[in-house]
Image (tube, rainbow over all chains, first blue to last red; front, side, top):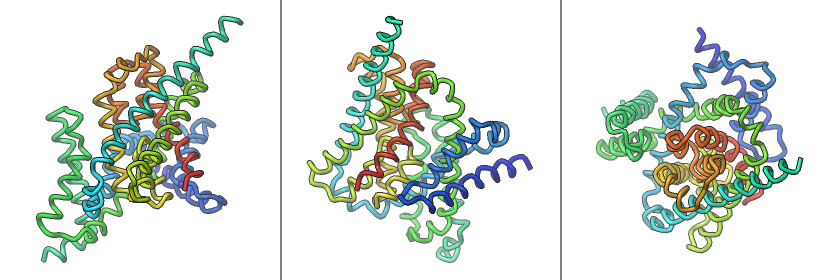
Length: 121
Length: 227
């Protein structure tokens, strides 16, 4: 019963997310709205960790199960990918490197500023 | 006979779950980041469909029920953000600044490189979200009109790059601050990179897992202004 009630809470929040998404004047993924709603409910204490943790942890631990159907769809796009395989791989490598470096440097810079600010306090 | 069996929704559900279980079991044996359960499971599914000449449409009848749970799985990310909430509050400014700059750099470099390589429009649409966690990346791709399967492949490659090369990048770029290293790992290579951050240190791991959710959210916001 515990699992079903936990699943019900999570699914209810998702359905609410779909409702809100439909009402918004711009496109915004409903599952991300549901994530924000659930986070808000947890922070406010309206939903406690123990109300959802068994099912949510199952989802988190086995998240990649839910991507397999999409990934298998790549079967249809072998032609498209083989035409651009090298640029595709290059983009993956370069953007990962750039993202890593820019994030690391930004955080280092901000934290130095923060420490500088505190020493003047 | 094969057609009437594979047309049942149970076939797609079984092939997806069965392949995943097999993938997890193999990873438990090999314990190597490249023996990723999702890669293995996807290879099993594709091989099975090709060998027995089963149309993808038949597989989709059942596998769409598995995809249906992507929504609740994404919502569950709230719990992992919530568990890091005290650390997030304490480091709010570096987290927001780092993930915002990192996400912007990721997205603009994707767009720029796609132009540079003269790739068809669909590539930019499918790769825009490649640095964020798959659940959110798929949503962004759906809105951009890209191909989810390419997104999943790119996100996976990105994550594996992070998981394998994070320690090297930290040394090469002389990142001495563990908070900076953790946020860089999570922003650049989401959950797969975070699995590596867990081995590097506690601060790195916490920061990396915070960056997954925050970078995902920020990328969704930025993507609204693209395309």
